[in-house]
Length: 122
Image 1 (cartoon, helix red, strand yellow):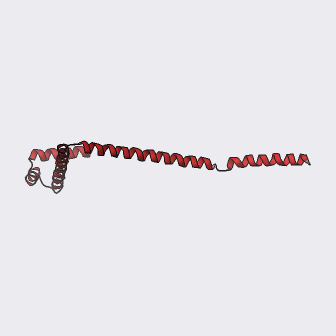
Image 2 (cartoon, one colour):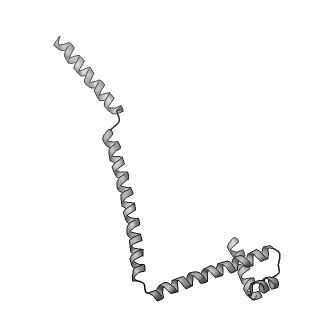
Image 3 (cartoon, one colour):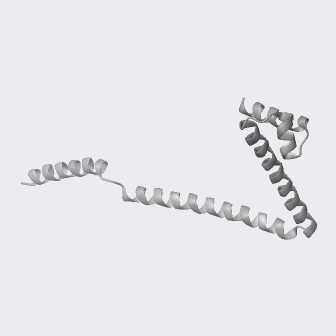
């Protein structure tokens, strides 16, 4: 009788051992979720620090610095608009001279803008 009990216990232990290999490890799933949350938190913290640094730099700027940045941006925007206007007129079939008259640029400036555009396309 004891022999049967021992055989049953050995069989049961082998069965449980085999089942343990196929069972999902709940701790592993939790560890993965914690790792993902930690990475997400670290990324958000980094982004916030970057934004805070930018804000601090902006607060330390003088009014003249801010005005210079605004002027540079406005100049860049006007140059971009000028280029778009030249390209639009060229696509409508106007000559360099006609585009120059329409945009108040010189013929050479029109030619340079179009050459830069063509180089950018290649």
